[in-house]
Length: 403
View 1 (tube, rainbow, N blue to C red):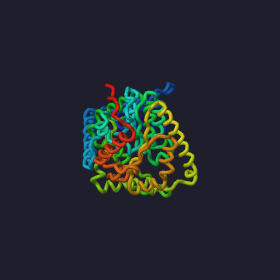
View 2: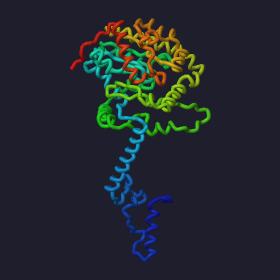
View 3: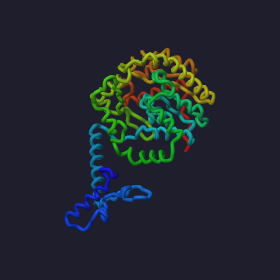
View 4: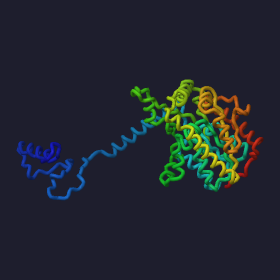
């Protein structure tokens, strides 16, 4: 029996209406209009193909043109909105961009200086300043919110890497475990990147990123919606996201966004985000607390093993603790004391380290949101850090990069 929504009933209704009006059509010889699709009941005893859905004639050219104009208007409005907010076009710090820099070691720059760590290494050490001092630009492989354990192990297992290694150490290395962090997907991208991903990255860096201010993950519509002050469900803790902090170049040289220096409201929002993610966050559960000593020991063992491989191959490894101030520094020192983290790391690895608390020239810089340096201060800090490496660790300028 045909369903109440089948087109066979529609056909019968149309035929009856035509007959009632004196027309010659009957239900037996009714022909469907072109826009009514055929159904299984129209083909008894015949294998049923995919249903035919005839599309009535439409002014497709004008429809396409209207959709294109609407798209361009909406995109222009979105771009205008974020430029008015203070954004400018910048290169994205994507997994693909990280992979491009990592592949420089595979393509003949294995003797370069490599920077590992998290967001402080990413923003506090300025590649152009370093290049001016040393004659050669380092390879920036730091990833925000991510421990350096995995890339450290990858470099230890890579015989092509024979250069120098500066590794940023934060409390998160000991809190999150060896493989923890927000950007671990970059390591998988490097191992498994396919042709379509490479092409997509090439197109993005040449056609979109240099020209569009809104082309940043923080400005994506879905993330903007999540940031709104929605009512919280009972028993569900809020999950604050870190706002945009940096602007970058094609080779991942990042500076703190100057909006944090000039916009008190935005700075307060970022500071509030750090507080909710760290010292105002719910404390670890007893089960999580019980796992921490084992996670820290496993992390230390992995780092010790990787450093031993690198040093056996002649790679100079130096750890660095970049500055933090205010509540952020107090939180780190309380949750992961220096004696249980930094001092233990140097003792177990046997590698040298540079801790900002031990050097007056690495102190006194402006960190607007307590964790990353303002752009001008990062330039001065890079000079001071490089001079320490020269003076105490013999970091003379390396040979020029191969052409």
